[in-house]
Image (cartoon, rainbow, N blue to C red; front, side):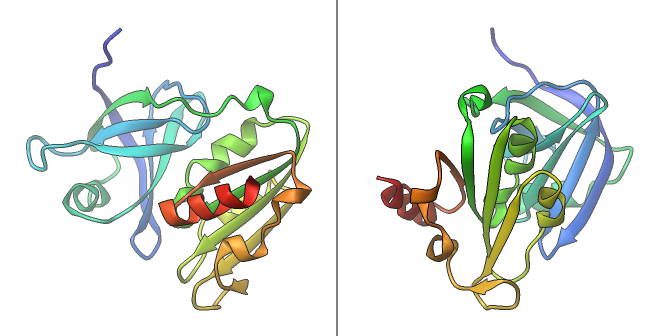
Length: 195
């Protein structure tokens, strides 16, 4: 079945850190943890919609955390409560959280932390440790602490948590499963550590 864009009304669109925003759209939406929506807050320019991972989902709204990187996300960041945007999804395979059990490590870099709140909220009967790396300052980690056993933070400049790369404080041997999202170079390093 071909997916189509639906309109949704913005109920929250706020800056939570430098160039990082959280937007919530009211309505009944569906998604598996790890899936994303194609989002448009403009008519023709830029041509392409923006793929943005689901941050959280409940019966009344869907939420996304995104980084302003260019024209499209810049336009999105300027939208106000009550404005409408177009969404198409859910897209992608997502995580099969019913198969994720035991001691779980969630390793993220930068905006890669965004899809992990909904993911860890959906994992049942497991011990979850989060290893979150940022350039300067962390965001959304306080919300993660409500659902994780431990949250370990690294920053490139040492302003918060451990100074260095998130892969430096993570040991895959201790875990039954590892979920990872972030920059390709970081995910490759974590993947190689898990082999």
